[in-house]
Length: 102
Image (cartoon, rainbow, N blue to C red; front, side, top):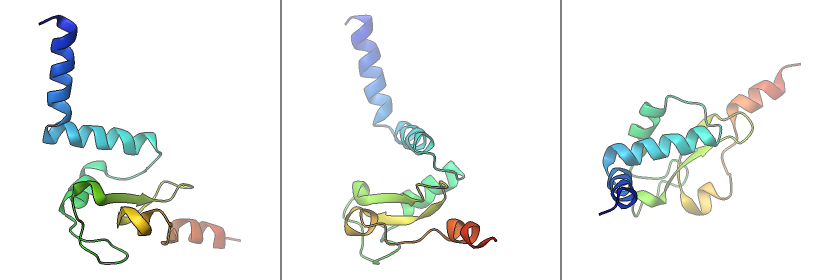
């Protein structure tokens, strides 16, 4: 096996491991400007069994989404993919607070 193929195989093996999944998820959150304790939020994400908005149980791990404010990066909840996360139904209390300051 060539070195490039070995690296690809090793990278793939890592990306499907629990540690690799966590690392990739954290990198995605950082890239999107989400501000939080990444380890704590990841633990909450993987242990949440139902949507914080509609209370429906999650079908699988891919149906869980970290809902966040796109303006300030605050985490708002763990929501199901559709319709709750895609319709942005939860207002951001931090932005509401900032907007209320005279």
